[in-house]
Amino acid sequence: MPNIRSAKKRVRSNARKADVNTLVKSSMRTAIKNCEKAVSTGNKEEASNKLNIALQRVDKACTSGLVHKNKAARLKSRLTKAVNAMER
Image (tube, one colour):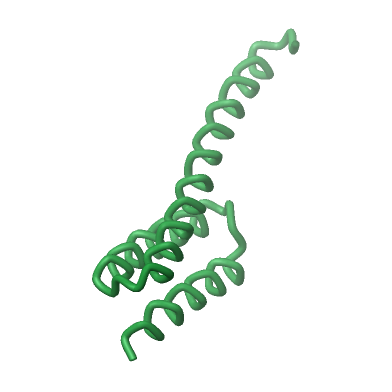
C-alpha cells in the first residue's frame, strides 16, 4: 500500500478506470454474441437491430483504447457480412 497521498489517489483512480474498462469490454463481447445468435436464428429484423448495438459497442471500445482499431474494423466487417448474407 502506498504511503504518498498522490500514489494512494492513483491506486483509487486506477481501480475505477479498470472497472469501467471491464464493463465496456464485457458489454462489447455480449453485444457481439447477441448479434451472432440473432444471425444463427435467422431473424433478419432482430439481427439488424443487434448489429447496430454491436457496432456502437465496438466503436466505444475502440475509441477508449480497449480494442485496437484494426480489430474493431475486423469485428464490424465480420458482423456486417453475416447480417448482409442473411438478406439474400
